[in-house]
Length: 513
View 1: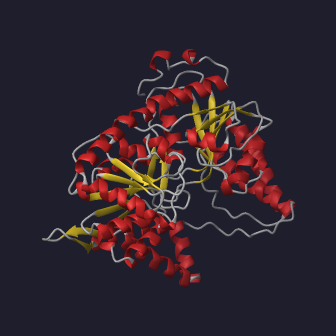
View 2: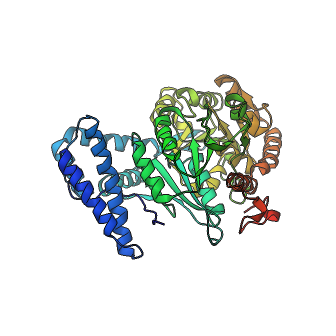
View 3: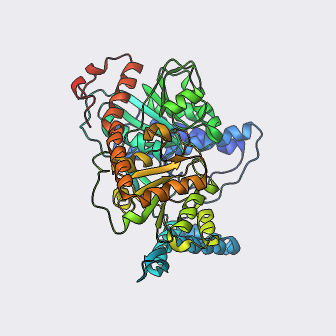
């Protein structure tokens, strides 16, 4: 059985133009692959690089055969020299990018501080701005990237593990990637798991995760080649539809001739990708199943699990009693441009309330500009992206979590807050009532939500009561129940009884693992 490869950049030599030259290059690569012997570390490294290059060249040959325009490849320079070349040949865009990077660093370098009267004043932190700019600049020029997720298996692997391939359009920071990481850490001893994705995290890399990279627009043959390399027993599709649907469809078509069984997670409020080959559908909330797939009989709901040991109540930090927070990727998949409006309304009603907005994305400059225009920037702290490990400490800086989402499939950041004993207020949207178990702190529009937030902040006893209710309810979203459910899904897909699967006795199914 062939060894897996970890996707990486193509070799540095240029790729010549023309059908014959490209076909010859592909032929040479294929001959090299056939002649290389397995089992030696250096040979495996060469296989990884050659295979990735073969995918790219094969895709280029298919484009030419289909009559699509050809783009000339140029010599791959070391990244610092490539950036220098761009600065010389296109100084305008390069300087503009640096100016925007400086402005972006400034958005997360303003911190509210209280004066002698307890009023909030915006205080610039030039050192923080310079540090952020320096980090981003170094990443741009030298390609320095931090570790986004570290996969740490909790158990030693058992013999003869079935192979599993997770298919997901990107492995950016978010709930879907966290789900894959949780499964790898807690079921990786029973299944050899790898990942196929279209996009890697721009801000860093993952450790302990074997990743195959096929960009959006890759042909079915490229997917088929990865499937042949991995030879999975289970293909787990993490589906969220929208513009990524053609990529999913190509992946699905490539799986049809294989013997792998298919499991599909429906992670967003969309119609599932339906196919007779799919053995089981998993919905992350009752809301998604009821709204988009009430007719599917081979499906079940499995709520994403959270680490109850990491997100635990503790002493609040600073002026948390008069602070609120929002933690999301600031993208339009969950939030809208008006999602900041209820927070601005709170700042106007309660000038002493600190508002912490955690996350980054295309909506960050929109939210920042709105706070400036409303004259309440001094109430806001925009933190930018925060490492997952730092979230529990950050949550303790505010007493109330705000969920002004325009769509919600499940959203782990809300159970995080609940597990820490925070009150949650948000819009009555999607799965939020299901997560909270009530709509008491949910509103239909911005001013109504601002009113709920202010009422809770004005009534500490009620704030405590809502937080206690949330903490108790969060127990149903523990990782143990989620992992047990997926263990059953996988075992049933393979036709094996769950209690006979090695390394995971039935008695421990619902323990926190």
